[in-house]
Length: 119
Image 1: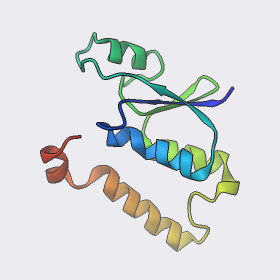
Image 2 (image 1 turned 90 degrees about the vertical axis):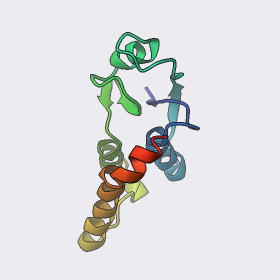
Image 3 (image 1 turned 135 degrees about the vertical axis):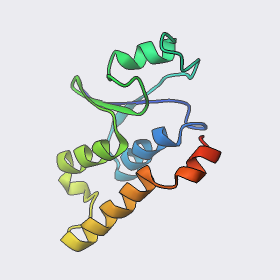
Image 4 (image 1 turned 45 degrees about the vertical axis):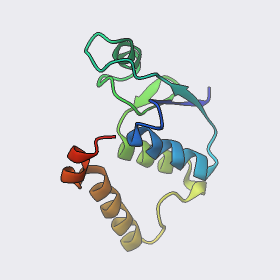
């Protein structure tokens, strides 16, 4: 079974783009499952479809043979471990630590910008 990446509209979901770009750039085959944003209400079709594969009901979600990973950094780590030949992280320990620091900052930092421009 191929990897499945559940994403929202890539025009509005920068979170969906993160693992999508990683998979494309690395040449890792996957099936894209686009779930249309209809509403973010608890009982929306969007939330129902995502909760079928992920407890948070948010995108992105990577599913590998029924196993779901739903955080962008966790997805990147999972892919790096499962595709070591793709060299997704630097081989040098210090360079790898720096790369992870930058990714973590991009992942959780810039709160003022994120609040002003949520999409």
